[in-house]
Image (cartoon, rainbow, N blue to C red; front, side):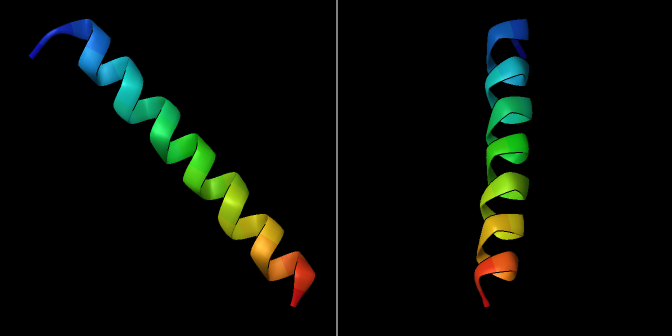
Length: 27
């Protein structure tokens, strides 16, 4: 597993968390 892929996965998780928070706040 290359560090680049791990970084991308980490960023994806962070973006998903923010998106989920935004959606929850909108509700």
